[in-house]
Length: 324
Image (cartoon, rainbow, N blue to C red):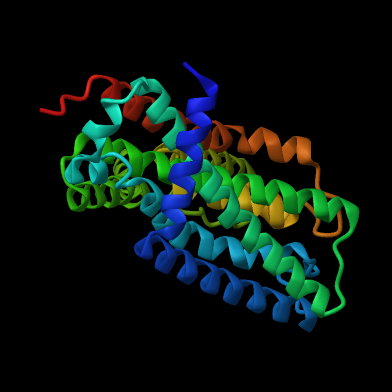
């Protein structure tokens, strides 16, 4: 593989994507919606309103922005990749490109790098605009908040890159761009909605009804109450584990989990605590990011696997692609 040729292809793909009217339209809508979410977050932060006793921080602004990224970001990522192979195959330019002294692995690697550059630009612009809006209001993030903002940006890029991988994988198996777009949206819909919903239904069928609390008359009945609490805890833990196992297939769910942990760590710890003790983490306690990571590592691995698996599939499919 010649690295210079890979860079040349990446620069070409980056420029072609930014000149595409469809992508620019989606990119513009994405930035507008992200900015609207940021403005709503700034208003909520400056109003000083708290939630569950948790005081607002600058990170609330990015939490509002992240809710828009989870939906429109998926469309942006898919739009950046769904026609990179099928579009050139449909136009016949892919045969011309392969007729030149360039290897297939260089082409697909260049396309991936070009897509990554595009999505990095989108992520950087949205963060820069949000920080600019904060500066206009006279608010500056503290050093620890700034580092968490960078983590938020990295996670958002990874999510967009995973959606790009879905689009590129469907582009590699489709002869037309329209088919690739439909397949990519269907794959994302299947992973983000159908599988989690099926997991929730399955968990309800497997676990059954929630145990009913017994009537306590005097202290002699406390053993019955303790047994109920233990059964309730086992029931809730089993249901939660089954639902989370299904949700791990959803890139959108994993992104939202990580985004919430980064922007609202105290709220995340409260929500992730024992089912029978939602207040086990006091709201005025400093968040322990080691504990957060122990809850979150499966979502991090699952989110990393999305681009690895789909881009790996696209890579293998493109190397064996028959252009006849």
